[in-house]
Amino acid sequence: MVGSGALEFVPVADIELDCENPRIRKFLEMYPEKPSAERIFLALSAAGGDENESSTTFEKLRQSILTSGGIIHPVILNRRADGSLICIEGNTRVALYQNFLEEKVAGNWTRIPSLVHDQMDENQADAIRLQVHLVGTRPWDPYSKAKYLYQLRTQARLPFQQIVDFCGGRQKEVLESINAFSDMERHYKPIVDEGNYDTTRFSGYVELQKPGVKEAIVTAGFDLTDFAHWIHDRRLYPMHYVRQLHRILTNPKAKEIFLKKNAAEAMKAIDRPDLDKALIDATIDQLSQALRSKIYALPFLEADRLRRDSDSDLALNLSETLTALSVLLGSGDDGERLS
Amino acid sequence: MSESSKHAELVGIIVEYIRREHTHTTAMGILDDLTGPLRAERPSKIGGFVPDVHAFDAPLTTVIIGEAKTAADLETEHSLNQIKAFMLYLSHQRAGIFILAVPWQVKRRGSSLIEAVRKDIGAHSVRTITLDDVGC
Image (cartoon, rainbow over all chains, first blue to last red; front, side, top):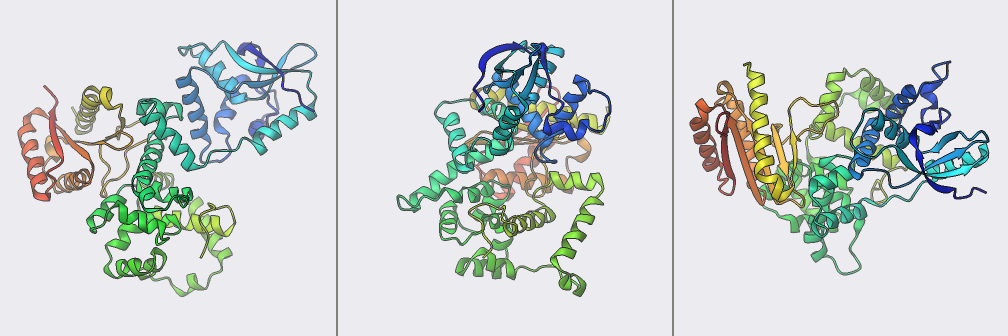
């Protein structure tokens, strides 16, 4: 049984980072000697839950701590028999405090709020790590997050930039979230009966914020109330079809099918490149291996260009493929199922 | 001064102008396409072009697109298509503002150009501002 520990404000200089931390062990195992604090810091900044997102997450946490002037959740420490303190949970936060101190970042980084356990054994430490990282807290769904951000902006009147800083500094994400909530409240709410307000449709409103989507709707002679009906009637389903609206609405045949049936049927009418026989006959396994090889062989500059240009046809096709794969493997959104 | 340094200077002028004139009242987010750190946020493509500056509030009220042009590239076909695409996008916003920053020698030409585009595509709701590298 793990106790809750005693809350203390511990000098960060007295805390030893845990080089056995599963998040960074894979990096540190490459070096035979005991890793320095600097190497642990580098490993923490490189590691993350997802290879592509790791640096962003580290940077988000850094930005959020700087904006808040400290951490909200205390880190968890173990006081060993000799009195030394090792960090069981919150290594990145401790490392950031130590880094802020070293780089003389303005603020009070000398002591960090900590829950200190006395002589915890390895089983108890594992229980804490498992609860924090494998079970974790229940994350808010995207709609609830957006609603909270919207309220902070419109009712608490927090400046946009401040909200962005609290959230870790990604302006486009915050903007899309707030605007998606605003559009959904304004256009979707009035057309659904009370009790039928389906918050899982929120992702459709996030897609609506991508550049060019609203313009495509208005240019084709529709408005956001029409869009709300399309979402409600499942004419736009799965939600990633929202990104294809400009292609559908500018193609007369596809537009006609979309208005009569749905986006999935309409997309079939849009010209697709001719696939040669070998590609058509290939199995999913062969195609997935070929796709992986192509991706790994992609030059850095080309990959970087693709990441920046999320509206390109290739990016849209890849995004569509990713959604289909997530659904196939059972890791997609609850609201998205292969029909 | 090289073309690229001049361009960067003009982008900086747009960002400063937005900070001065709009940030206090609406606390806008500002994204610019100047060389920044790796993974820094940059403006998204709009109508096939990436603007030099994209500023916005949330929920969306004011949207600002800023474009910097040196004398050499002000009147090229590419610039014209870019400005048209940005104006069209702004015309669909509740309060769209287009800012053009140019060297002082071509400020009048710049103003005439964006005014002509605005009329041409019927983007009457879009407010236009021309800045220069001397008096802003």
